[in-house]
Amino acid sequence: QVTLKESGPGMLQPSKTLSLTCSFSGFSLSTSGMVVSWIRQPSGKSLEWLAAIDWDGDKYYNPSLKSRLTVSKDTSNTQVFLKITSVDIADTATYYCARRSYYSSSRAYVMDAWGQGASVTVSS
Amino acid sequence: DIQMTQSPASLSASLGETVTIECLASEDIYSNLAWYQQKPGKSPQLLIYDASSLQDGVPSRFSGSESGTQYSLEINSLQSEDAATYFCQQHHDYPWTFGGGTKLELK
Image 1: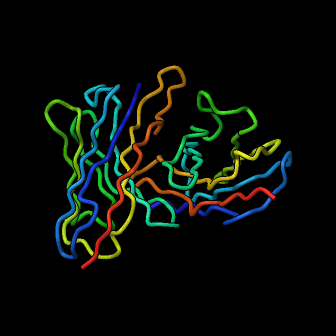
Image 2: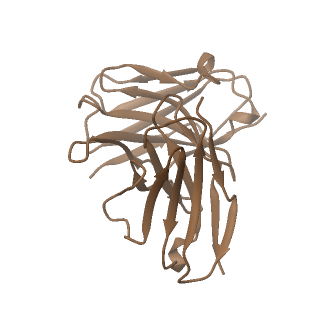
Image 3: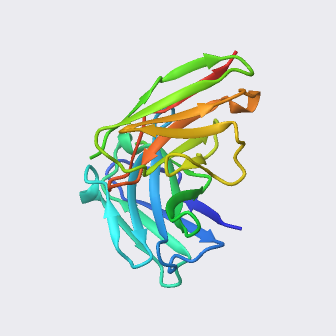
């Protein structure tokens, strides 16, 4: 069974660094084609893709936030991390991590599993 | 960035009706499109991938299609549990982008 779970500070002050952890099981990030992404959603709004890291350790960032984002993974390939520097109120959102895997039967890349989300509030 | 323009932003329909939600990509995304359903307080759930492939476990009343850069999600025979917000997402190119969402209300 594939599961992902996000964890974070819940609340932090403006200008601080937000650190999020995605802990997952049921798959290995070292499997070819596997990607773990971070996506966020302000309350009542749409989804914004932030960053991703793939099985080969390659990293991808949303250009609109790239200077503030760092994605990484642990050596055991069971956790992925996201850091966002200099947060402000606009970073208040629910943060999700999600798995993109490769369906060999249909030769398709599919983002098929999401975590439950971690709510983050930026407030002084 | 590839822009995904989703319409309508909201719609209201009755049980048993058929509804269609559309997403227009700003450039060719070569069918690299997914549809998600999200209920309040929950994470998005995958419905359709590769524009028209039904994810395992998703009812067959959900279907996806494409015409050029226009992608559509059709829901037939609406059920009460279909009340939710629906999002399209392209993964042809980074940064992956989402549509603005369609809130479906059941009358």
